[in-house]
Image (cartoon, rainbow, N blue to C red; front, side):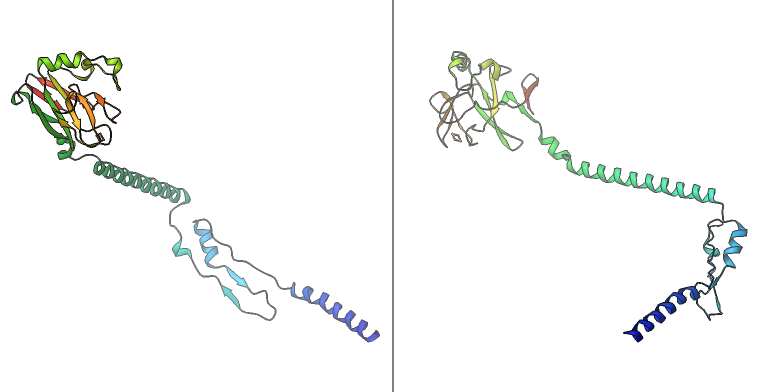
Length: 241
Ligand code: FES
């Protein structure tokens, strides 16, 4: 055991001596030029690096980066940076605006679709007591030129007894002209005109009966036939839509 203890002491002593020996090397670091002044640029170009390893006598030269440095002052560099950031921001904003505008223009209705949004009808061509069906926005529209007897019949109904209570007055702008969508309010079939138990329209799909004002009177449909937007811009003319 005695020789082992002596040996370990000797090893510990030599280990303490080693780092002290290595600290004798001095280190000189190159100064990195952070300014564009000529004095510092020259200093950066001539900076040297001394090796920290013992026995290494050669010195290494730091590469010269001066030709990559900006020639102007730091304030002019900052000005250039702000200008570039501002200009690129403005170009990006203009590009984004143009892209969104193009997208919205593509999504909006085209001129031919807008033209289909309104339909003009010559009412002089529809005799009294007759129905006409036109197509508007892909749906059938019923136009009925009602007789005086039909108008009277439509007004004689007890509104309170109806499934979808609506007076005839609420459904027409001119009593002789009844304009409504030809779509059954049950499941969307097209009812047949001048048919059914109430002298109006009859939907054969499931047996809904509408009266001469287009109000549901019998069958599964829950609501009256819908009234679209329409107007009479002049005598004898109807515009649907
Ligand atoms: S769709 Fe008209 S009654 Fe069912």
